[in-house]
Structures are given as C-alpha cells and as structure tokens.
Image (cartoon, rainbow, N blue to C red):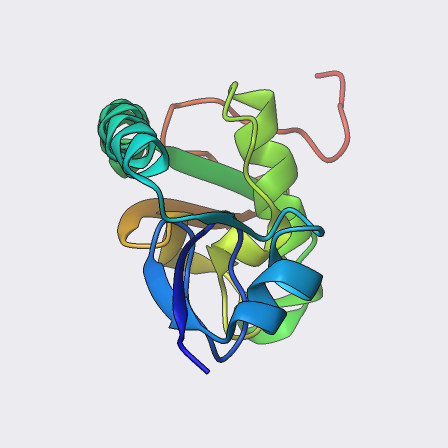
Length: 168
C-alpha cells in the first residue's frame, strides 16, 4: 500500500502540527483525517493556498507580537501601591495575591491578562517593595513593582490614607 501526502489543518497528536505536509496511509487519510477536516489532500492548489495562509499568519503573528511588546514595555513602568493592615513586625493581616495584583492592573487599564499570567510563587505577606514578573505572551515577560504599605503610612506618591480622622 502506497502512502499519500496530506496537509494538516489541525494539530494531530503523534502526527504533526497545522500546516505540515505528512505522509499517511490512504485509508487513514480518506476515512479519518479528510472527513473530519483535520487534513486536505496535498495537491498543487492546496499547497499554494497553504503557502499563502502561512504568509498571512506570519504577518498576523508579527503584528500581535509587536502589540504584546508594547504592552510589556508599558507594564515595565507600572508601580502598584497596595495599602494593607499590618500587624507587628511589618507582617500583613492578610496578603497580596495574584488576584489583587490583577484587579489593580485592570483598574489601570491593562485588560486581557489572566491570574495565571502573574508569576507570583506565594502571596506577599509583608510590607515592602517587590518585583513581580508578568507573562504577557509565551516568550514576552514584563516586570512590575508592587509596593505594599501599611494603612495610614505615607505612600510614595505623597498621599496618605487616614486610619481615623481627629479634630484638633
């Protein structure tokens, strides 16, 4: 039995990725891959169409990458100030989690990020300045600064968050 060449339209485990030309048994191609839309016969027309699609996809990928690099550059300049209640020894009563950081980033207009994109090993449980890595895209990362300050302390921007107001 002679093998036939097909162009994969989807990723097929243990066979190949989208756009690859692979050799398979004729029955496998005819009865499984082609009817399910997983592959196309490797004819001259389909190969030319594949090359055209690859070119368009490459342009789209490059545009997307430029956008993600721009987002990463903006994120590198971000400093988040988190005001928390503090116990003795600069330990927080709660913690600053990836969810808190995500919400603060969304308030500043950074949408489209997910909690899993914030690479935080464990929640922050003390006062201080922390560098947190944000995964913008699979190979693009940014670093933000998170300042955790106690309630009532002066923040770096000069603002104060009063715990209680007193009249003098």
